[in-house]
Amino acid sequence: MTVSGDLKQLYYSETLAHNSMTTTHTSVCCGFCGLLCDDLTLEEQGGVLQVTAAGCARASSAFARVSGATDAQRSPRIKGHPTDLPTAIAAAAKILAGSQLPLFAGLGTDIHGMRGLMDLADHCGAVLDHMNATAKFRNILTVQGYGWVTTTFSEVRNRADLIVVMGSDVASRFPRFYERLVWPAEALFVPDLSQRKIVSVGTAQTAAAQSPEGVTPHHIPCGNADLPDVLAALRARFNGQGLAVTEVAGVPVSALDELAQQIREAQYAVLVWVAPDLDFPQAELTTQMIAGLLGDINQKTRAAGLPLGGNDGDFSADAVLIWQSGFPFRTSLASGKPDYNPHLYDTEGLLERDEADALLWVSSLDSRDARPETKVPTVVLADAGMPVDDDVAVWIPVATPGVDCEGHLFRGDKILALPLRAVIDTGLPTIKVVAQGILKQLESA
Image 1 (spheres, rainbow, N blue to C red):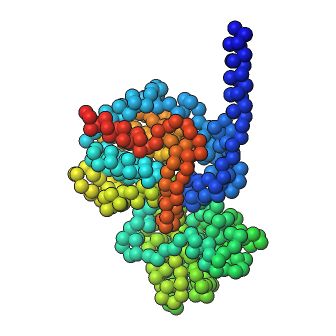
Image 2: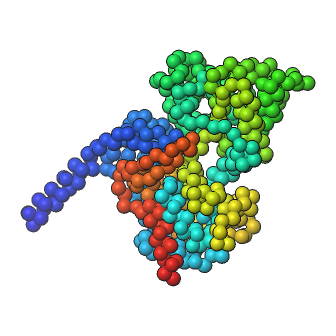
Image 3: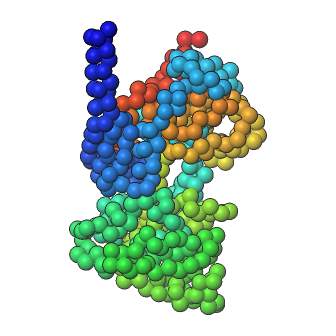
């Protein structure tokens, strides 16, 4: 008994020491927004991660939330009852096997996860739609119909001398945008960064864009729904055309003349916007006007657009879909070949019309439970930090790229994919592993 007691005490002492140890992880890439900042420092204690340097509020919350999940949160569930992974996979396969038109939505995953989902969708004849697709189509339809000139993060950081933010509160979705791209320590081709000009048009916050010297950007206020009219007037004034009014949507024409002159004098102007912030009827008119303005500017000087995205893995999932099918989101594989229709194959429409009879919802990069309300049988593949919904038919916690599994995500300028390494090991399966497991069940049925 004495020996056993000594061994037990030794075990507890070693466990306590291990749990109290702090491990530092440097140069960590964060996948929780499209900036993919790769300079974070994390401290790990007892498996829980804390951002200690080069982070933001979003990163701090996400790393702590995912790594701090309880054992109960990491357990698969069937109708709220804990189960093991093989049983959950079998239950998910049964739902998809009985579906006439399954809908794979959310799609908050990385390149590897999306590859696994594509194989499964091809077998099931599923429709694929991302949670950010509605916003993304404000850009996609403009590119398809008009084309545009865009730039990269490096070009913005190193060359832009005038940055015009169009109707977007950039910092709320990309917290370190101004720190990393607008006000870095140095830029290659802008010797004096204090001379870099920032202008905000629309309903955007300007405090986060303040320069290190405390200069607040010039703000031209208007409602975002008025941006198409304001931008049309700006295009007219830039091109020397007269207007029969003195203001447009409350914006003085003199303010637009001043902005037009700033654009003419700039060596490299960049127009920045975030499509989800342009949330109003016919919002694509804004991106069409931006594309047209960029075309006008480039006939006289140099300018480019920066349509920020990449959150929730939308650029990464979309890239895989395009690689393998030739089409972006809202593509159906039900007929055995890709059928792209951005108006017919939207998630909410399919569910409201009772056309989709099963939902596979994927979200491994965001704590939001953005699932649409539906009565169809639902399988959820979510990171362990998301609150569990016991009403879901099958709930399978999955690993999160850049936290407890490796992955690759496309950056918000679409110029490259960055690797994300696993910082901790929770034993959770990746989305690709779960998708392959479901596919194996279906193939063997």
